[in-house]
Amino acid sequence: MKFMKDIMSKKKILSEYETITLTKKCNAFLQNKLPPKLKDPGSFTMPCNIRESYCGKTLCNLGATINLIPKSIFKLLGIGEVRPTIVTLQLVNRSLAYPKGKIEDVLVRVDKFIFPNGFIVLDFETDKEVLIILGRPFLATRRTLIDVQKGEFTVRVQDNQVTFNVLKAMKFPDPTEEFSIMEELETLVSMEWESNLEETR
View 1 (cartoon, rainbow, N blue to C red):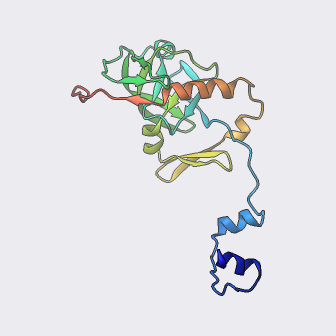
View 2 (cartoon, helix red, strand yellow):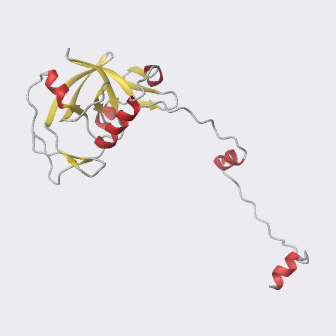
View 3 (cartoon, one colour):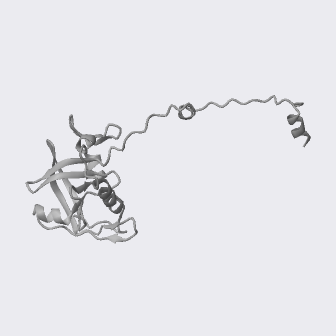
């Protein structure tokens, strides 16, 4: 109590001082020098072709551990029968979705490159423009670089590469596209594997 009275009456002077070095981020925040907020570039999509039957966009999704193709597109391609799979997809509402099967070595053309890819076939309602989802297996194998600030992503094969600009592709977007894509993302990116490994090929 006496200590507080001394401080209030200025009879006691505090002699200990402490200097704290702030980080660059803290300094920027305190000095109001934060970088400007950028516009959301939207979903990263790129054009692709599968045979002569499909020519459209594919959604590049880092949150997905699989490549996903709807049953309707699979039938359109006419590439044979699906192979059985024990994969089960867990949706965000905790419900489970059971794929129709899997297909392998589907040749997907992206600009001047052609890649073999495996897909999980699922019967689901698709976006009217983006029908196929390519997940991390494709993006990692193709050494894909994503620049969110510029709205660009680059697919590389050895010394060759091709770059797509999301901002240009979305110059005249459908106002419902963002919501429908996000809905598909939220329901399809979470996958649960069964306890046993998939049957030996």
